[in-house]
Image (cartoon, rainbow, N blue to C red; front, side):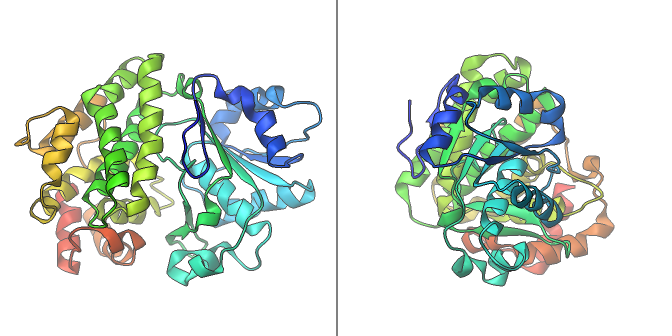
Amino acid sequence: MQLNYLNKPHFDHGAIKNISSILKQLGIKNPLICTDPGLAAMGMSDKIRDLLSNELAPSFYEETPANPTEKAVNEALTVYKINNCDGVVGFGGGSSMDLAKSVALMANHEGNVVDYSVNEGGIAKIKETVPMIAIPTTSGTGSEVSSGAVIIMNDGRKLILASEYLRPKAAICDPDLTLDLPPVLTAGAGMDALTHCIEAIMSPVIDPPAEAVGLDGVEKVIRENSLVRAVNDGHDKEARWNMMMASTEGAMAFSKGLGAVHSMSHALGADQELRLHHGTLNGVILPTILRFNKDHVGNKYSKICRAMGKDESTDLAKEIERLNEEIGLPRGLREMGVTEDMIPHLVQHSMTDPSNATTPRLPSQEEWEKLFLAAM
C-alpha cells in the first residue's frame, strides 16, 4: 500500500524491508542514520544495518536527545561530513526525524540552525536540502510527512523550522516497528497524534480535505478505540496500524495549522531540566484549550464528537480528560514538575510561537497566564 501524499509514504506491516531500494531510488549510498540511545540499546541500529544491502555504507548518530537541540544537530552534522555521507535517515520518534531534517538542511546551507527558524525569517532562506527519508518508530508526531521540525536552539528557545524542502523525500511507515513501544510512550505519542488532528480541525484556515483527514484520524484513535487498545496490548497489530495511520493523518491535517496547545507545549518542552515529553504535554494541555476555544470554532466540536462516535453534546474537554486518565497520563502540569513561578517565562515563549497564527482564539497575556494555571 502507498499513500498518494506529497512524499508517498510506504505504509504497511513489514514496509521496513524496502529501505535499501528506497535509498537507491534517491541516489543515497552513504546514509547518516540518526536515531536515539534507547533504540540503539534495543538493537534497532543493528536491525537497520542488517537490512541494508552490501553496497550501502551507513554511518550512525545515536545520541538524539528527547527534545532535539541545535548542539545535537551540529554533532550529527560533523559525523555526516567526516564520513562523506550523501543523505540522511531519521529513524525513531519525532525527535530523531526532526534532527535528521535539520542535518539534511545544514549539510548544504551556511550559517547556524537558528538562522532558518520561522522566528528568524527562515522560511525564505531554506532551499533544496540533501535527500532525507523518515522511518517512524512511534505513532505521534507525523514528522515523516510534515514540512517542519522543532529544535531547541543554543539560546534556549524551542523554535520551528518550516519549508516544503524539509518534507522527507520518502517515508517508511511500518507499524511493526512500534509493537514493543512501552505503554507510557504509546500513550504520550498517541495523544500527540490526536492533538494534531483536533487542533488542525479547529484551525480557522479553510482546507476541507485536510479537515476530513483530521476527522478520520480522530475516528481511528477514539471510535475504533485504537489508542486504548495499543496501550493495553502493544502487540495488537490492528491498533498499531490504526495509530500509525492516525499519526500520519495528523501531520497531513496540520498543513492547515495548529494552535495554542502547541504554543504552550513548545514553551514547556524548551526546559532542558524538566525534559518533558511533547505528546504527553499536548494531551495534558488539550482539555484546557478545548474549553478556551469552545465558543470560537462554529460547529467543529459537533464534527469531532461525531468522528469519535459520541453524541454531539459530549463535553470534549471532559472526554479527553477521561481518556488521559484511562491511558495513564498525568492529571496536570504540576504532576510533571511544572511550578507556578515558571509561568511568566512560559507565557513569553508562548506569545511568540508560530502556532498562534492559526489558533481560533488568540489569548492575551493575561489569558495565557490563566491557561497555564488551569492546566496545572
